[in-house]
Structures are given as structure tokens and as C-alpha cells.
Image (cartoon, rainbow, N blue to C red; front, side, top):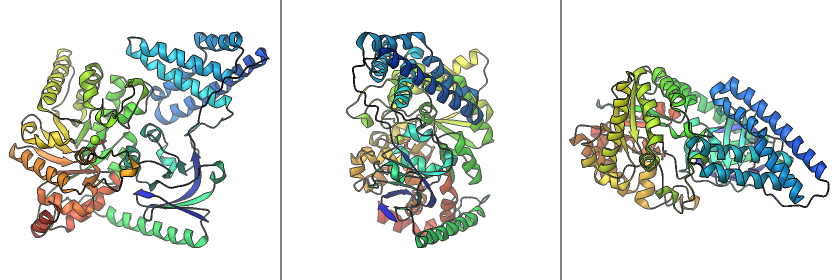
Length: 552
Ligand code: PEP
Ligand code: MG
């Protein structure tokens, strides 16, 4: 048995086979080729194999996610048959007597550059397709026939690191746990693990090679340990702990249907954070009062090009209908920093967390913003939708946003398209927004505090930087005092405040948040009932003084 220590980002135990996920290093060397015909035949064989892979992926995706989402694999198949693309590769092989890998990489770079420079959003999106198809071809040529993140049975994924865009593509029913060598506990990949309700460790110093692939392992999210080839004692004790967890979950289920009310009668809303429609099952199962944060950017991350208004509308309508009149807060896209989609062409930034992200993209590219707003407003006719804007720093931004939202509503009215009464709120996740929350409160319907970013920007600590995990302290008085101030300012203006950052689920602070008068806590679905239990056991009048003194 081997064992490795990591940092746990979510508790729980998983037992299963390991699947090592190695990002393919597509290093391409230029080699001289003597037998051109043989090289051309090699190229065409690779195209056939890649085409078969794409066909299989298309068939699987049609069954699992529907035709519209599967279409991307069809587009990639077409790209593989595109004569301009094929002729360019053949031409490079012939005229320069070089290997196929080099010709594919060269063509890919050239085509991407051409597409990216076209002043048309759709064509710019094609640059990402060329990149994807070419990477697939290179992976086939390198002899890697396995489709990177496609898993057939439930496994423990071990990887160097996982980007949020890779994580969202995982089949959530087939991932028992994550273990990564790198990554920060505050990253979106960690947040996704919590939403998926699965144990996850990061920073495990483990050599990623095929020798551990397929071996039995245990991930202990309580101790932060990974055991490979566990001995009988380890297996037995962890199985017993799994049983205990199951029993606890069963007990928590008895709290379903109960109000979130303290012993002295203070009520608080407990909502769920979600990233996509697949999370709705957990939301229902755990009796969420609503959805406090729908990270809509994951719809964009799951795509190769901009999701259309109709594609988005269907997603938002499904959430609205499923939640049947309960409030659903959709956060407009928060792309940027660690959440990157190639087709946005954001370019390299020295400091992406402080760069072109979230509302800044929406305000500088209003066509993208308006498409999303139209989709949300249209879907609001089917349930109780609210919109929330991320990364706000000024009143002027809010006024600009409201003007755009009003334009969208006017356009819908002009076309006789129905929409509901939609609350519009903002995230308070920059110190600037917290400090002027008295002014912002006059312009919006609610606040939701994003403690993940608020901590990052207040403490000047990059939440992605794993070396700073020990310095990232969301219990810092500066952060907690800002939360208290925001709640107070919102109440003075007659609006409500929630917390949708990870801190909202911190059981140590539930009493403090209740004492501050926080109106809503939005947490990963798996944490709702545990939080309800704490609320039911709290007496705010009794703990108020102690909490305020200890933390503020
Ligand atoms: C936050 O910053 O606290 C938040 C909820 O948003 P995200 O984690 O997606 O940046
Ligand atoms: Mg944030």
C-alpha cells in the first residue's frame, strides 16, 4: 500500500479504480520524410481514426445530452473533411518533405490565425474548432487513441491539474473523487468538486504514470489522504466510515420540509449553488429553498463557441420550471481568470484575476451580454428568475447594466415576447463594492456576497495560487467586517443580502451570519441539510454578543 497526503477540498470517502488523466503534451518536431506517399497515407489513416472517434462521441452525446449539444462533434467531423484544411496539410507534407505532425500543427496555427482575425463572431469561433480537431489528429498520430476525459465506469481521477473547462465535461456520475498534484483549494475546480458532492484532494505529491492506472485506491477526504492498493485494514475502516456518512445523510434527510429557523425564531433562506442542469437533482434531493447562484459561465465553458440565445433560453427555462416558483438567481457570465473559453479570444493577460473578466467583458461586448439577458428574460416567463451581475465596482457600472437590461426588455415588448418580473441584484465581491454598498443598495434589488473573490481582493491573495492557501483567510476581520457592513447598508435601503461564496457554508460562522442578519445563505446542494441542522440548533440571542466579539 502506498499513501499520499494532499489538501482536502471536500470531505467524504471514495473507493474505486484509478484513472490517470494526463494532458497530452502535443510537442511537435519537424522531421524530414523520404517516402512522401507513405506519409500521406499515414495522414489519411489518422483522419479516418479521428473521424471514427468523433462519430462515436457524437452518438454518445446525442443519447446523453441531446442533438443540439452533440452537434459540435459533427462540426468537427466536417472540419476533418474540409478540403482547404486537408489540402493545406498535404501541400506542406509534399512541398517541404516533412512529417504529418508538423504539417498538421503548421496548418492549425495558420488557420487559427486567419479565423481569429475575421471580423465575425461565428468565424472567430471556428478558430477553436480548428485547434480542437488538429489536437485530436495529433493525439492519434502520437498513438494515443484514448479519448482523454471519457470514462466508462466510476473512477477516481488523478491528474496534474484540472481546468474548470475540463471538469465540467466530466460525466458526474462516473467520477468518484478527484486527486490533483496542483491546484488551489479556492479554485473553481475545487468548488465544482463540492457541488458534485465528491471527495477531492489537491496538492498530492504523486508521480503520474500509467503504472497506477486501474489500481484500486481509497480517497479519504477527511484526512486528505490517498491510499493506492489499500490493505484490508484501511479498506475496512474506510468502508465503515462510508456507512457512517450514509447514516448521517439519512438522518439529515429527515430535516427535509423543515423551515430554516433558529431556536429563537429567526428565519434565513438556504439556497443552492449550481453550475449546470445536472446539479438540479441534488438541489431537489436536498430541499433547497431556491437557487442562490447559477454560475451561468459553465454553459459557455462547456461549448466550443458562443451558446445561442435559444440554447441558453432552454437551460434557464428548465431551471425555472423545475424550481416551480422558487427563486432562481442566474449570475450573468463570469468568464475570465481561471474560467477561460478559447473562443472569447481574451488574449494573454499578466494578471487575469484583475483583468478582463465577468461584467467587464459584458459591458465592453454588449452583443454577448444582450444575448444572455434576452435568454434570461424570456425564460423568466416560466418561473421566478432573478439576475445577478458579478464583479461590480461602481454605481456607474450598475446604471449602464440597467440601461442595457431596459433596452432588452423594450425589444422583447416590441416583439410581444412575454417575460416576468425579474429582480436584479449584484454580487459584492470587490472591496470597492463593499465600501460603497450604501450607494449600490439604492440601485438594485438585492446583494449576494461572493466571499471567494472578496477574500482574494481584500487580502491581495490570488485564490488560484496554491502556495498561498495558508495565507488565504476568509475569517480575516477585514472580510467579516465588510460582510457586516454590506448587510447593514442593504437593510437600511430596504433590500436583502445573501452570501453565495464558499464561506456561507462554513459551520463555524453560521451563528455570526445569523447575528449579522444575513438573509440568505447559498451553498453547494450537499451542504444544505447540514446547514439547516445548525440553524435549527442555534439561539441567536444567546450567541450574538460572543460571535460579534470573537469575529468582528
Ligand atoms: C465568489 O467569488 O465568492 C463567488 C461566489 O463567485 P466565484 O467563486 O464563481 O468567483
Ligand atoms: Mg466571484
